[in-house]
Image (cartoon, rainbow, N blue to C red; front, side):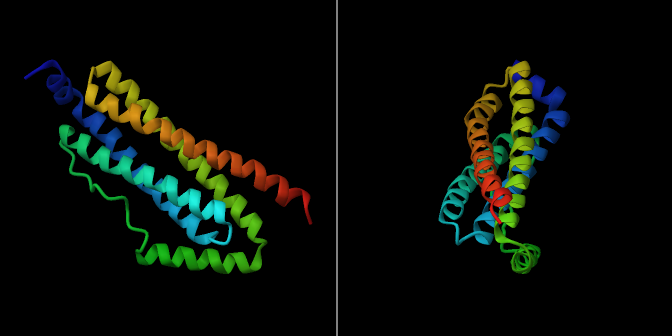
Length: 173
């Protein structure tokens, strides 16, 4: 057993829990991005960009499931399917809410939620990268270094959309 395998064995439960949590968070981020896209399909930028960057999270979920095997995890390589009954109910609720509230306010609320979710995922990537570095786990570090910048870009996109949307929603009548 080499040093990396020994460290994985010693710290596997903690690191495995971190990988599992990040896997869940990335799956949630992917679902949130797809839901945002569906709820605001009339806004072409939101629709297309959210779908594009959701693919990154789906890829992150796949990569985490692969690296998780080294820590004894059996994680689903597919992001949670949005076509579940709960997701359909949530989407219908959002449609009904949109009828009673200004759609731009709903978009602003959704973007704020998305930004907070992406920020949490970003922090989880940072924790995993620091852990991988301390353990000298090159494979885990490579996954974190590949995926974290894309999460940061998702967060920056949501932030820029919040800024643009907030100005329009809060100033115009």
